[in-house]
Length: 216
Image (cartoon, rainbow, N blue to C red; front, side, top):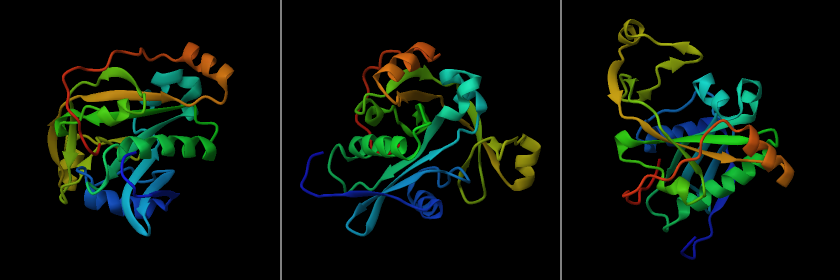
C-alpha cells in the first residue's frame, strides 16, 4: 500500500458495521446478520468496513463446491472505504480480511463476491487480490424501501413477491448483472489441489477495457 499512514484492522460488532454501511454504502443496507465484520481504523476513527455473510441464495454457496459443502462457502457481502485513503488501500484491506477470516474460521474454504455493474463497478479491486472471475449474473429485480435502501428479493430465507413488497412500501427496480468473483481459501497446499479439483466454477479471463473504481 502506498503512503505512510499506518492503518489497523479489527473485528467489530455487526451493529457498528451495519451503521457504517447504512451511512456510507450505496445500498444503505446489508444482511441482517453479517459475520464476521472487520473495521479499518485510522487510529480510533472507523474509515472502512468489510462484511462477510451467508449469501441470500443457497445456490450461490452450492455453486462453488457442491451442495454437500455449502457451509464451507461465504460471501464478501459489503465493502466500503472512505475516499481519504491512499491508492491500493482497498486491495490491502481485502487481502488482510481474507487472512483474518481464515484464521477465525478455518472451515471456510471459499469466498464469493459480486461487483455491481449498475453502479459502474467491475471488480478491479478484487482482481488486485488475484480473485478468480467466473462471469456475469443476469439482470434481476430488486426493491428500494421507503428509506432508499436496496433490498434483495429474498429476505430472511423468504422470497418477497411484488404484492408483499408493495404492502411494505417497497418499489421494484431492475438492476444490471453483476461481475462474479471468488477466492480459494485452502488449509494447505494439498488441500488447495483438492479444492481446485472439486470447484464447479469455471475461471474466466478478466473483462477488458475497464477503469479503476473505488468501493464495491
